[in-house]
Length: 297
Image 1: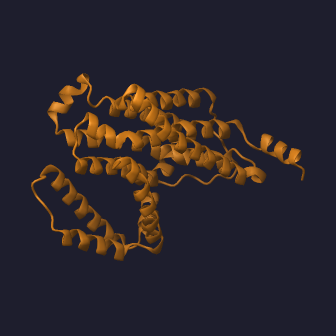
Image 2: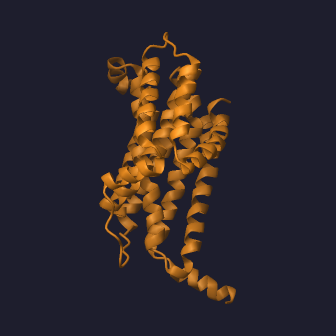
Image 3: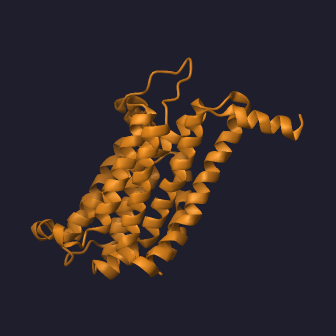
């Protein structure tokens, strides 16, 4: 096959929803990585959180994004990709704007009514609702809106879009921080993802494919997650105990939990998870090191 023939296959092998979804993915990733790269500085410089509190809040932001993604695929299947993408970008636009406005005067009554740590933690969870819907929608659109002979290239294009957005995000955040102020990083990315909301409404059409299986229910996704997790009857209660301890320490910073309790909880969790989860735990180490440059520097 000649280059021109292959190029023609690629040109005609993808439907319009494929290109729309992947173009919006660039802006979603740019917004996410730009927001995350600026978060530690924002929490410390503008909101005066301590280093320990900043680490906890950035962990909430990133952790909720990846946890809710477990259920995002099932939700996107049931809503439909067009509706799910529209909701996702609308939620992301509002969430990023709210993060950038935490210190604004119009939110002062809310800040005074509840502990600032709980308020900020809640606000940082909101973007996860949008991010968890975007990825399954774009991946699913890539599968449905591409012909069999170019589908592998379609996934390559998708990951290229992700990498472009991921590379540009911190660069944009650095420029916006210097010229506009760190709080305006979030307002600008909010405008970017809100624009993608209108792009989806105007140009994205629901991709359909003959023979599609009925979407799984949330209950089925939860059962599958428990199977993948391993001994969930052991792991989930221990995770709940660890979470409750962390919440107590957040509310009562003068209290402390002995190190051996944390070590014991970790040992029980590692003993109960499956081999696949072990792989994820090991791979997570890379991302912990990667994000330290933005959290601690």
